[in-house]
Image (cartoon, rainbow, N blue to C red):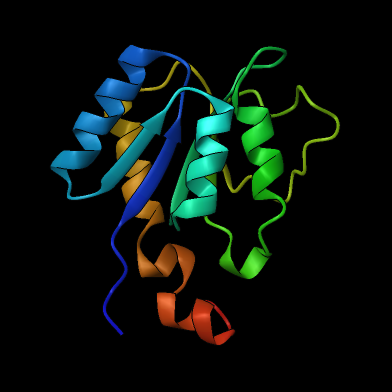
Amino acid sequence: MPAAARRVLFVESDESLRFLVHRVLSRTGIEADVVGEAAEAISRLAAQKYQVVAVDLVAGRGEGYPVVRALSLIPAASRPIVIATGDPEGDPHLDAEVISLVVRKPYDVQALSELIASSMSPEAAGAPDAREEGLPLC
C-alpha cells in the first residue's frame, strides 16, 4: 500500500495566519488545506482524510468548536491528531478526548508548523498500516 500523503486541515478565521501557515507547511512538503469557516472545514473532513487537523478555538466566537465536535464523531482509531490553538476550555460540551495538543496564542507560525510536521511522524501517530489493520500503535 502506498504511503498516505502528508495532509493537514488548518481551520483559522484570520486570513493572514492561514496564508502564513499554508506557505510554511508547503515548504516542508505537507499538503495543507486552509479554511476560515466551520462549514467548509466539516465538508472537507467528510471528503478527505487528514493526518492532522489544527483548529483555532477562540472562546465564544471561534469557528473551531463545531469542527472539533464533528471530529468527535470519527472513531478514535482513525481520528486525525487534533491541535487546538487558543483556549479549548470555553465550551463545556467539547470532547476533551478529541484534542491531542493545545498551542496557546499567540504562537510562532514556524513553531506551529514544526509541531504539525512532527505530529505526522509514524512515531507520533502510529504507522498508517497499523491504524488500518487495528494493530496497537507505537
